[in-house]
Image (cartoon, rainbow, N blue to C red):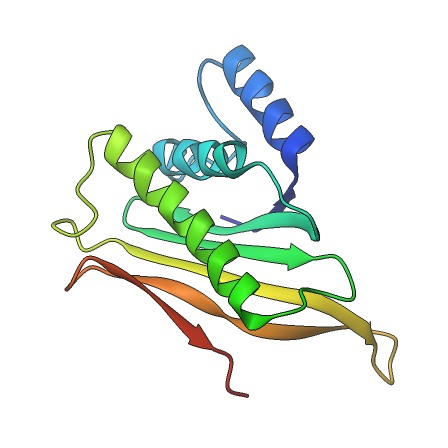
Length: 150
């Protein structure tokens, strides 16, 4: 599945499109149930002050990756990043459980990355500052934040 930028309005539009398309969220035939969980996660968390949007990078039956994009200049503290990424991860776990899954037993991979645009490079390419990510550890059923180490 290719990643998509989805804000609150975009997620709501996807739900409406999904209803008209017979329950399919997005247009990928790979794993519509996983895409549904990912879209519902974004709707559930909504947004927060300083967030620009959330990207769904991966939505497969046992693998989910989200990317929280902040508006420049980004959060004031790494503690905000930890709280925000864990909020999204908890929402995804909640949606998985609500849809009848057991993320620990099924060994589900879940990552929520956080970044902010950081100007342009020498070639004009968009640069980003990556803060790190929260990941779900299915071995101990815990969320763990790992700062980015280039």
